[in-house]
Image (tube, rainbow, N blue to C red):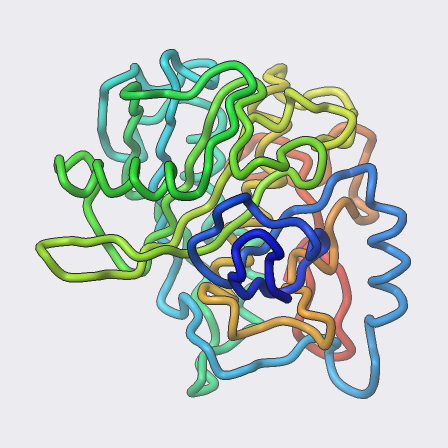
Length: 314
């Protein structure tokens, strides 16, 4: 559909009637609010198997077949997460000692992320079960605070500044994940209409226009009733524990639908959309999956095999 404020064509999602106020690119996909879970589940059940097949189909676009790379951009005047990188620093993902960093460093290669290997590229080659956390940038320059609304144009300009300064290295297969603190409102609808989203934008690198994949990951624990499921923190770090499910959601959707024209169902819902706010039979009231030896609570993902369905492993 088209955003009434911008005229930008938006691919439908759980919040398909909501767009960041100045979205620059098409195919903005949102992580719905937990409070919309019942409605989302009803819509999901109504369309799980509109006919034969897995309930999701390929539309010809690119996927991150050879593996997904991620860079964390912590845009704040102080570390957002416990033991997170010092403001002003850059480094390898392995040196990010936050729980979010731990999750990113251990997500690839798990039975959970292997669900994405049931999706293929245009040649029918399965997606590799790999997530590489290649680096971070703890950017304190012009960091938003309070309840500031941060437009997509501002996020793109911030990423552009990183490419210009060398704080960020451009890579077409990397998802640049923008984290902010408190109730900073990435995109204009955080906490009231969505919990995060992924999209893409044009940046300039070496004088050449390039496509950059990015995700907006505001501090979901700021709205625990809307953007977390409200259960106890399995690692004693509610801010980070409350972030990882939305983080996984955006990574796996970017992996299988990086430009918004690859894998989605007849209603435009991507793999993780179809399973948002569902936890599976392994949910024990606190966590439902072990990643890197730590317990986490992460939503299920859609299996593109057999008759399809929401699962926690493959």
